[in-house]
Image (tube, rainbow, N blue to C red; front, side):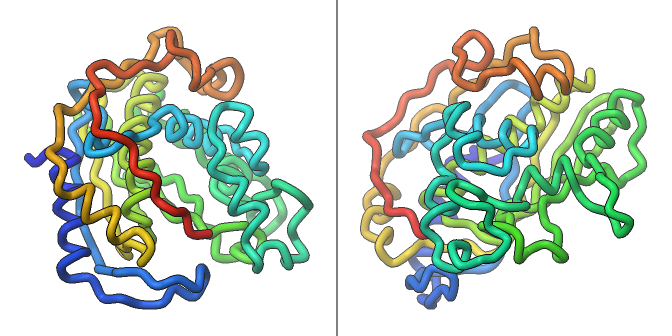
Length: 289
């Protein structure tokens, strides 16, 4: 099996060589686009799919996923645990700024983790998708629908951004946990560098609190694109030679969902640390919001 970065660089080259240049309606920017890619990561040995051909800020990625798992709805909540990526979408997207459902500065609305922890059923009741999945896994029960989704078609107008990586489906075989993650839209230079390690972190942490062994992640990508102001920087990155994949360590003190919801700190080097991460110099890609 190819390493995560080999899969990543192959997709980057494919977009540069075969991508169709289109204008994106939401961002009003041009982007080279291809449809469909399938990535696979083996999480059983601790390998962490970080790109090495530029610096990847893995703690920010882990922090963002923890914010989703906690159901955060405000950019400041994410920033408080070390992830600053939500300020732009909360405060700089014209359509969201004009949205009557926006509650004010830094609000991201009913996006991502809000749907995960507080899905609304037709009677107005709350559905905690994460709790249902974890409870089933701890009970050793896999009914083939251990699915968590951030995508709620009935509330898309109430979110700063439609969920890009929108659904996570867990499966259990003989005590090993697998994850299939579905992603509708991928900013390959920026977003995918976050999303690859996020899927493995999600599998690892849910396996740990459920008493299961982590297996593989299957990452399904649909609209894969490089914005026109990222193209030349990407041409530089794909010429770099990838280095060895690092290893993610998670403290065994983290045992329950309540731990994740309360005292876990993604910036604490005694709770999460990466071993053997060497990388080429950083590349500052522009962000489209």
